[in-house]
Length: 255
Ligand code: DGL
Image (cartoon, rainbow, N blue to C red):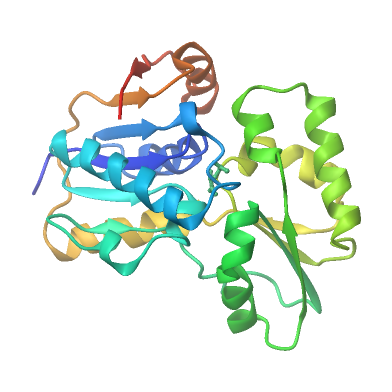
């Protein structure tokens, strides 16, 4: 048993969609979360910047005594070198296992420009759906619009434009390849009726918990959760209330 917290990092509030899976399925685990809202969006930055900022968040979480780090961010997961995953505790990135998707002749992935440029989701889709047509859809501006609480009509407009520009229409299945996007899943579903949307968060948390279980490091009693943000703590707290269904404090952090 290990009752130290599980660290979760993201460029902002997106990783809360991963944290909510951990809370729902492993309620005895304590969460220590860091969101770098100040420097969001990461998905429009270079891999060098992304790796540097992610390294700072890793140090922040290690400084708070976490037993593992879940990277609740596709952009970080697919833009960091192998060395990022090494260190004193396991570091688990977002899953690219899409084997539970329905068979379809056309699939799509919606993700940040940096994640799309890595083609990691495409490779995951090709493993599961060999021969399928794959639409890669870089959603410029979408994560930041969600992060900053842009009006629903603005967010709908960005998604609609991306679907059109990158020919995602008619996909039987689509990956929400940025952890911010499940926060507006309803808009995706409205704009692409008939498409099955897949959120990799569930599989990612399962990967992390399997690693901890194998090391006999699951928790049996929850301590105090801590949620840190480098900006926008009021907005983050409001969103956390929706995601977790109760008021939870958001604390400021400096990286
Ligand atoms: N939430 C992040 C992801 O999963 C990225 C958002 C951003 O661009 O900062 O890719």
